[in-house]
Amino acid sequence: MITVASLVLLVGVLGFAVARPRGLPEAVAAVPAAVVAVVAGLVPWRDAVRELAELGPTVGFLAAVLLLAYLADEAGVFRYAGTIAARWSRGSPQRLLGLVFVIASVVTAALSLDATVVLLTPVVFATASTLAVRPRPHVYACNHLANSASLLLPVSNLTNLLAMSAAGLSFLTFAGLMALPWLAVIAVEYLILRRFFADDLGTPPRPADVPVERPPRFALVVLGLTLAGFAISGPVGVHPAWVALGGALVLAVRQREPVGTLVRKANPGFCLFVLALGVVVLAVSRGGFGTIVDRVAPHRPDLLGLLLMAGLAAVLANLLNNLPATLMLLPLAAHSPGLVLAVLLGANIGPNLTYVGSLATLLWRRILHHRGAPPVTGEFLRLGALTVPACLLVGVASLWLGLRVSGL
View 1 (cartoon, helix red, strand yellow):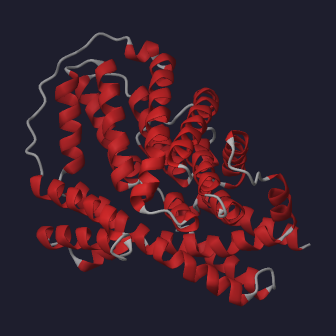
View 2 (cartoon, rainbow, N blue to C red):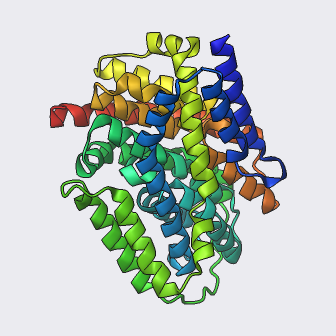
């Protein structure tokens, strides 16, 4: 009964997050579900408080990064990136795809996958329209890279922040171990998307007059300093949330943003959802389903163990969503940094297989519907079936090589 009850709560929370009836925030279902889990005895209240305390700094960082990305957008960073892509592509769909890959990979790594989905995808749509090229390859690249290119830095994805804490890795060590998998996965994504959308990319170049956009120098400098701050914050004992908040406040003062707007753009509703989801996932982990996952999870960070852990994380991401999958697997992998990073490979790459794999993918799908260009489900699934297994294989192999070289 405990297992069934906890799974019902989790499915209800995720179903509400997918559907979002009347546009209500995800926390509307998640917070009551977390309360029910505690009141019903599925999670002891002391364990629930401990879980919230552990998630608190990570969720605070999430809020700060969401705010930082919004302020960068208001400063014109994404419009400028779109202008650069349009001018440098010279009307070529193939060249534009390569530029979108570079920009989306950098934006995802530096400002999180949400920035790529919410802020860059509309810019890519507009850029494709300006150049009169078919947008499908480029907007699919935004979605795939929002997930798979979020491997590089702890700040790239909420799952990464959780994993860095669980593995006890520094910012620079994390980035060093994930750099090769990041590059390898992006290369595989590019080769497959280039082939998959060959017809769309085969149209002849159509040069267009692109207005010159002034570079937002101040915002770019602040973002660069913020990234540098992330790298040095760990050794000096400062949580990266404070660095992100500092960068956001500098931009907010410069742009004279109203306080009410800043609070809304930090998305407190989504932050509450993440906290409540942590309690609900804890209930699932304590039940029979968690026991099954524990039994099948590998415990050795050899090549086979890394591959099995990444595969398990990918499967759970597409069954439960990648955030619950990460929360469930990290305690089982915390004894080994290599296994923790393998969890990330599965949780970040796996969501490209189905719509429900990550909240970012669901949001991307909603954006395309609003644009009047909804993705075709069969096409989405076929592309995911080609990219996910290939990216997992090269990602795990690259991670294994990096672990061997580093001695971890």
